[in-house]
Length: 373
Image 1 (tube, one colour):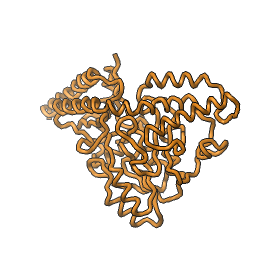
Image 2: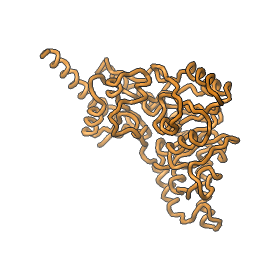
Image 3: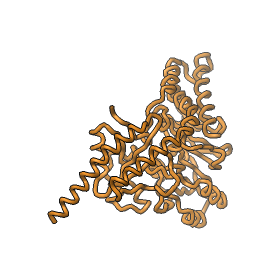
Image 4: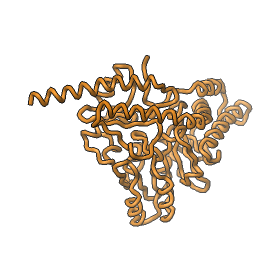
C-alpha cells in the first residue's frame, strides 16, 4: 500500500467534502441570478462562507472567496498601495506578488527578526504593509504574529498574514491575531484544490485584481465556483475537529525525528527549536540530495516532498532554509515530511524503514570513499 506523507502540499479530500461537492454540482443556478435556482446556489455559497468565518473567528462579511491561497496573497499585497515588507521565509506567492517588496530577515530558527522589522518601519517614508506568514509551509515554524502586530501598529502599518498552512492544524482566530488580512486555502485541510479566501478586516479597502460582475462585494469578480466553495465550507466545518487530533500527529512527528537522528546523528531538523506545526518535519541529510531521497522513497511507495510543491521541478535550494543560514548544499539535502488526517503509526514506520536504508547506504558509501582516499 502506498503511503502519503505530503499533506502540506495538499491533503486528501475528506469524505464529507466530497459529499458536499457532489450535492453542489447538482445545483444549476448562477449565484448572481435572482430566480429560485440562483437563490439555491447563493445559499450554498453563503453557507460555506459562514462555515469558513466560524472556523477562523471572523465575520462572514470579511470573507473574500478566491481561486486559491496564491490569489488571496496577491490580492492582499497588490490590493494595498503601500510600501511592502515581507519575511525572508514567505511562500513564493508572497515573494513574487510585489517586485518592490523589502525583505525582513529571519534567524537561524526561522523566526522573523523583529529588530530588523522595526528598523525598516522606522526608515519607511510612509505607513507600510507587513506580510508575515503564520506557519511556514516547509519547516512548520510558527511565527510570533502577536509581536509582529504590536510592533507594526506602533508605526501605523497594516498586517497581512498567510495562514494557509495553519488552518486545521493549530487554533486559529482572525480576531485574536489582530491582523488586517489573512489568507486561507481549502486543499491544505482536506478541501478541494482551486479555492481559497482572503479575510479582510472591516474598514480595509483592497483594490480588486479581477473586475467585472461585482461578485464578492466588488472585491473579486467572476462567477462563483459553487462546488469548490461548498467543499471549502465543509472542510472548514471540520477544522476544529482536526485541531483536536493534532497532538496525536505531533507525537508521530516527534517519534519520526527521534528515529531519524538515531539512524543518522548528523541529520538536521530545521526549525526544531522553534514552535512548529504539529504535523511538519523538515529533515536535512548531509551528503544526499533531496531529489534522490524523494525519488527513492517514491519508488518504495512513500510520498514526501523536497519542499514547497509550488517550487517542484526547480533545482535551486530552498530560499527558506537559506534565509535560516543553511548553505546551498545543506538546503538541497532537506526533505519535508508532513502528516495528516489519514496518517497512521504504520505509515511513519514505513517511512523510517525506507529512509533508514537510504541513510545507511549513504554511510557505507562515505566509508568506502574514505578508505579509497
